Image 1 (tube, helix red, strand yellow):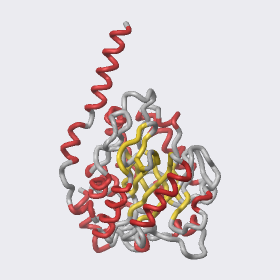
Image 2 (cartoon, one colour):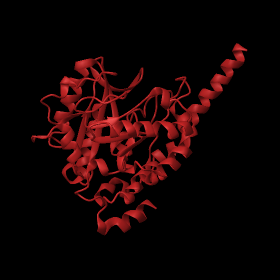
Image 3 (cartoon, helix red, strand yellow):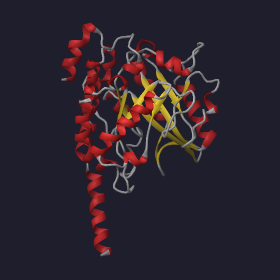
Image 4 (cartoon, helix red, strand yellow):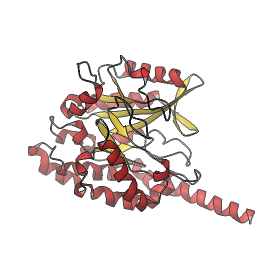
Length: 337
C-alpha cells in the first residue's frame, strides 16, 4: 500500500506540474499593444480605487519549482499583458535580495525594479502598484528594498507631500496624478496589526493592512484567510469574496485587492493544479462582477498565472464603471471584445 500511495503521489505531482504547460507557449508571445497602454483609455479624473485593475499573486515566482510557482510569466511580461498590481515578497540572505514564496526563494529582486522603471518610462499613461507585503530578513531586508527603490525609481514614485493622511490621500488619488509612476505599499511581518514604524517619515511608502484584518493607517486592504482559500472553487467564490468585501467596507478605505486564488491545502500538489480546477469558475465569476451589489468596491482583482486573456477580462469591467474617456469608450469596448 505504501508503494501504491507513493506512485499515486508521484502521478499527482507530475500532473500538477504539467497543468498550464500550454500557457508557456503563450508566455513567449507578445500581447497586443492595447494591453501595454490600456490605462490611456481611462479618464484622468477617475479615482484609482474606482479603476478595475488586473493583479498578480506572488508575482515574481516564475523561476521557482512547481510547488511554489504561482506565475508562468516574468513581471516584465505581466506588465505587457496589462497587469498593474504586483504582490512582491523579498528575502535578504547571503548579502543578496531574492523573491520568496513560503520556504522557497529564487529570482533576484533588483532586475524587477529595473523592468518597472523601463516600463514606466516607456508607458507614461500607466501606473503600477507595488505591494511589498512580506519581508524575510527583518529591518535589513526592508532597508535594502527601500534603498533600491530610492535609487532606481527616484522621481517615479507617487508621494504624499501634503497635509492629508495616507488613507485620505489614496482615497482621493486620481489616475491622472499617478500616471507614469509606481505607488508603493509596505507591510511588515506576518500577523502584526500595528502600523509599521518603517513607513514613518517616508512619504513614498504607503501602509498596507495585514492579511487577517485592518491595520491603523492602512491605505491598501487585502484580506486572506487560509481556511477560506483552501475551500473548493465554488465554495470560495460563494463565501470568501463576500466576507472580504465586508471587511473592506468596514475599513478606512483605500485600494482593495480582491484575492481570487486558491491555496493548496496539503502544500504539495502546487498552485498550477488548483488554478486548473478553479480557472473556469473564477473567469465566470469575474465576468459577473458588474451585477454584484458590491461592484462599486471592485478595484484590484488578483489572480494566479495571469496573462493577456485573464488580464483583458478584468480590464473589460471598466466599461461598467463610468471611468472611461467618453471619446474612447467605443474603441475600448472593441479592444476588449
